[in-house]
Amino acid sequence: MTDLATLVWSALGTVIDPELRLPLTDLDMIGDVEINADGVARVQVKLTVVGCPASERIKSETIAAVGAVAGITSADVDLTVMTQTERDALKLKLRAGKPPRTNPFDADTLTRVFLIGSGKGGVGKSSVTANIAVALAAKGFRVGLVDADIFGFSIPGQLGITEKPTRVDELILPPVAFGVKVISIGMFLDDNKPVAWRGPMLHRAVEQFLKDVFWGDLDFLLVDLPPGTGDIAISLGQLLPTAKTVVVTTPQVAAAEVAERSGAVGLQTGQAVFGVIENMSWLTMPDGSRNEIFGNGGGLSVANRLANLANAPVALLGQIPMSVALREGSDAGMPVVISNPQDAAAASILEIAEGFAKSPIGLANRKLSLRVEK
Image (cartoon, rainbow, N blue to C red; front, side, top):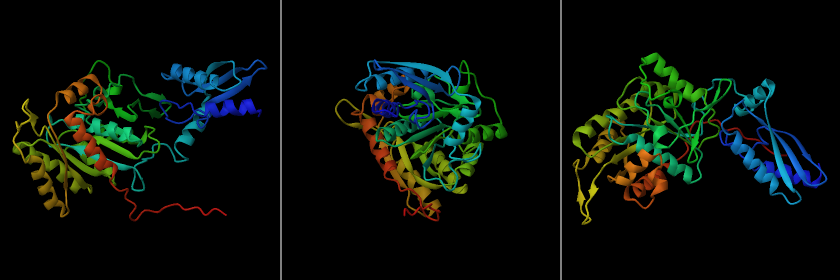
C-alpha cells in the first residue's frame, strides 16, 4: 500500500457507522479504493442493507474524510450493498462469535443495568430516565435505553426519534439519539396504534429487545419499566440477573406507598435496590421560596421502607423540582440536560447521573479472562 493509500485508509477508519457506532473499516464495509495519478480517490462503501437510512450520511462523511487527506484532490463514493455472505460474516463479528439470540446482559455481563420503575403512572419516570441516559452519554459512557413500557411507550418522543430501526436479517440496529442507543415498541408501530397484548407476547417482546438488538459493548443499560408490578417487570427481572432497581416517586404520601411496591417486586426477583428518585419535589416561586405542591417526604419514606425490606441501605438519589423547561424539552424531543443544563431540574438530574456513573461494576464471583503476553 502506497503512503497516500495508507493515509486514505486511516482516514476511512475515522468514519463511524451511525447505527453500529463502529468504524467502517472495522465493519468490513470498505471495498475497492482507487487513487489515480491526479489524486482523485474513488471509494466503494458496502452498505449493510438496501435502502440503508444512514446511506447519505455515510457517503458525505466518507467524502469529507478522504477529501481532507493531503494529496487527495477530490473524492467520490460508490455505494453498494453487502452480499449475504458478507452480511453473515458481519453479524458473526458483531455477536463476537456467539450464537444468534444470545442475551448479552446475562450473569456475566459487565454492563451496569438499571430497571427504572414506579408504582403508578404520571410521576415523570420516563422523562427522568431519558434525561439520565442522555446525561451519562454526554459524560462519554456507552449507553443503551430500552423502553419496556409496551402499552404507554414515550421514550422515542422524549428523544425526538422518528426513524425506524434498520434490520440486517434478524439483527435489529437501534436508532441512536444524543449518543444513546434506543429501542421501543413505538418504533415498530404506525399512526400511534395501541398495543393490546397479553403476558406471553409481552415477554417475547422484551426478550427480543435484549437478544435481537445489536447493543455492542455498553457501560450502562437503562430500562424504562411500565408502572406497577406486572408481567414485564417480572420478565425483565429474570432476563437481567445483574440489574439494580431504581424507583421514581413524587413526594405525595399516596404515591410513595404505591412506589414501594415497585421496588419490592425487584427484591422478589433478585434485584438489589440502587435508590429512589423523588420527582416534582417542589415548585420554585418568583420570590425564591418553595411551594411543595405534592407535600414532602415521599422519596425518603420509600427509601427507608425499601431499606427495611432489603435489610440494606437504600439511598434517596436526588430530588427533582418541577420545571417548565423539563416538560418543554420532553415534548420537543430535546432533553433538558442538553437544552438547558442550568435549569434546576436539569442540575438535579445531572447530579443523579453522576451517582449512576460512580456505581461500581459488579465483579464478585465473575470469571475474568486473562491473557499473558510473552
